[in-house]
View (tube, rainbow, N blue to C red):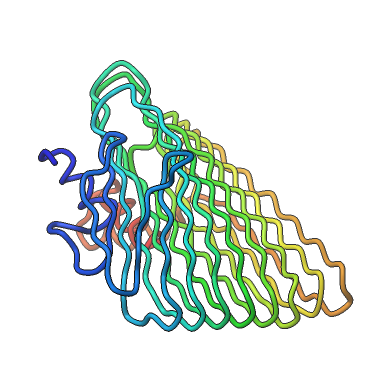
Length: 305
């Protein structure tokens, strides 16, 4: 990989050297590096672009890194990755895509990830998106995530997009069985004329299942954000969705909640708050010697942490 690709890998996966454990690194639509372990196997799909990741039952304290980077203008690809997590496993999966576009053509990566999580398994999934480059071509990312959780499983998802993506539609769907839990933390920032749409749909099908979907976002300049969260309670379950957004300049933010209770014991809650940075927060930091711009940056950094 060249230096640009290495920088993108560091941004989206926190990797400065090859990680321990299993990994599959994709650069400009080609396999750049791969490693498997005794408990985690990665197999190239034969019918379409993508990989199958098989994690054996009982696997503990192991990780899988599957970052994607695009450094050539004009690349457009769709990749399909399926994860099969065995019963009682406890693993960390780090994905993400970085695009550097210095050309005139649009660059686009659409990743479709499906997770089949076994009974009592635990998964932490981290997905980061990043864009850079001074070309006229756009940086486009449209991830689709599907999660199917068996009884007693636990999935924690960290979905992050802070810089440089011109257009994104982020679609996440989940189906939970008895006593399964799904936690989502989204952090998102848009600027310029960027557009970002996040759509979450969680079906709580199992007794005692629960979900907590939390989005924190900042919209600057003339950018636009749309957040849709639908929680469907089909039995005795607990669901919570929350959208907190800071709006600045001439940006636009839309929050669309949907709670669908199909059982008398479904307890579902949605919260949404959209507003500007409080003036007293700015004044307090400016009295400490910061400029207004520096104070805004500090408040946003803390908000998105």
